[in-house]
Length: 270
Image: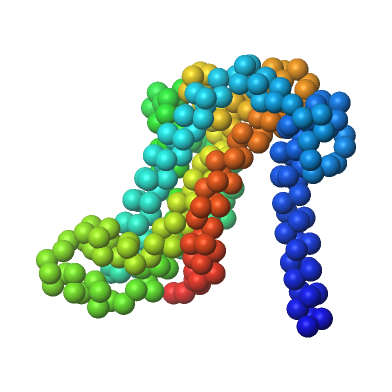
């Protein structure tokens, strides 16, 4: 009994340590500027002025649509490309398959900053600067999605694929109509991780996008916070950060059961 109480007490403390900063951020965004120094969980001098100021000074609605468009389209491309490459590496036999797989794994160890300049030069050469293509194409293939799809496809019985081939199904139909429905938690995990990464990406948009009408939400919020439009008002900056975080929180709350199940069962095997 004592062990159980201790275990749950530690879990509660751990949960509070993670959730407290976000609760404080939400509370601070609804408090007056003079009350931000108080670390309370409830707003002090409740006000909506911080959010009104954010929407007044920057086109947050347009930036939200831009971020949603880029995140949804790119996530879709990541699912398509990751599923096809992962299937090829898991179920097809061809020369150099293992080398390609290990190269993909190697790219996961490289920080994005290493490829930043080559990618930017490529965008300039293609004339994609200040376009949605610069935000979508460089992220259309994701090595993590390839890895997770490969492992998920390897966990399925070969008889499932053989039966589909006997029925005359082609490789694409096998992937998207036969195998994908059987690895839904993995698909959902890749979707959430990819969407979160794209939604929060600020560095790359800051480099390739200069037109405000094409800016994403993280980029616009970053420029708003450090570029002077917030006029040094911390509460306004926090309100902008809350607006940026809400979609990700909502997405996770809806799909957390599938996400946790997939992460718990996605062991890696050769």
